[in-house]
Length: 204
Image (cartoon, rainbow, N blue to C red):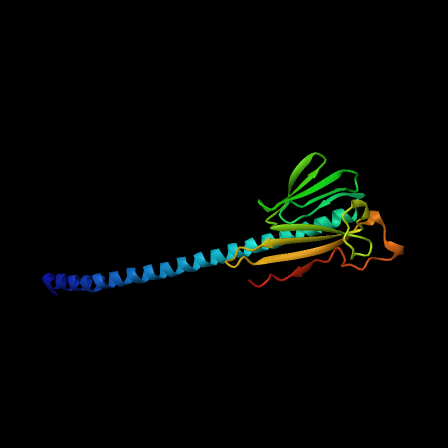
């Protein structure tokens, strides 16, 4: 084969093995479309994960607050103060089993529950939208306001979930004060303090 002919064949093969401008443009367009879809999917997945994690954190805070209240009040030596009025911070003060005074205060503005014990104050729970304490007499039906007449306490807490319709979760527990004793030696007709009754959010 002549050298000139061989050179022409090599040039034609090189031209056939290259990519045209149209092919390059189509490849770039497909890559951009694929990347946009993947980024959008990852962004949506992250939003769903963050929302689920936030809901789980708030519900855990809700149940943790009531479990802690149930455990501490059940073994308390005496109840000192119980204040719970609409629009005002809820206050619960009692002498725990070690003899130290614990004071729980709920701030509705910051949605936090503060606990003061032995001169130290710390955050007990966050994201608590509302917290109410109600005292009852030995029959678990008659409301009681004086600390000496309170035999059981009904604790109700509510959290708001991060949704457009402001969905809420409410839980409550009844706590029998062992220091007050049981009427006639029989157990009270109330819910067990270990059981949390979760109420569905109201339809808005």
